[in-house]
Length: 171
Image 1: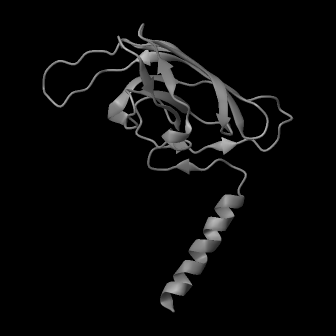
Image 2 (image 1 turned 90 degrees about the vertical axis):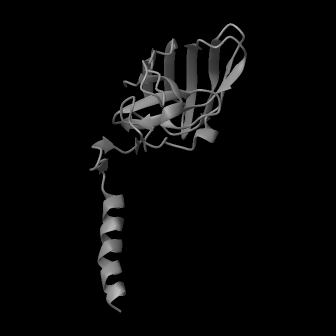
Image 3 (image 1 turned 180 degrees about the vertical axis):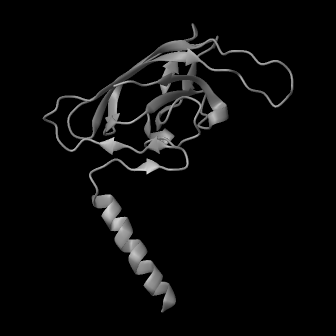
C-alpha cells in the first residue's frame, strides 16, 4: 500500500512534465533534449555544420594524433517526420568502407545517446579515394532548438571511442 501512495505522485509529476511546452533538460549534463516541431508553418528546420578532425585516442600513454577527416553536414526537415540529408566527408581511408553516423544532443565529445538508434541512420559509403557522400532522406523529425552534433564513426562503430569526425550543428 505504501508503494502505491509513492507511485501516484510520481506518475502525476511525469504526466505534468510531458504536458509542459518548455524543453526539458538533463540536469546532470545540462543538455537540452529534443524539442520537435509540431507545426509546419514556420518553414523547414535546417541544421548544418563542418566536420572537424577528432583527437585519436589509444589505451597507451604514448602520443596521440589527429584523424585527417573533414567535410560538411546539412540536415533539413521535409514535412512531417522526414529529414533530408546531405553529408560530404573526406577521410584517411585508402579502401572502400561503410561508415555509421548519428545526430546527438550536446556538443562534440559528449557521450550522449543519438536521437534515434544508430542503425536507423543510412550508412555513408566511402570509395577507394577516401571520399564519401550521402544524399537522401530518412524518418526523423528534427528538433527546433537545442545543441546538437553529428558523429561519424569508424566502420560499424557507434561508441564515443569510435568517432572518426564530428560536426557541431547550428540552426
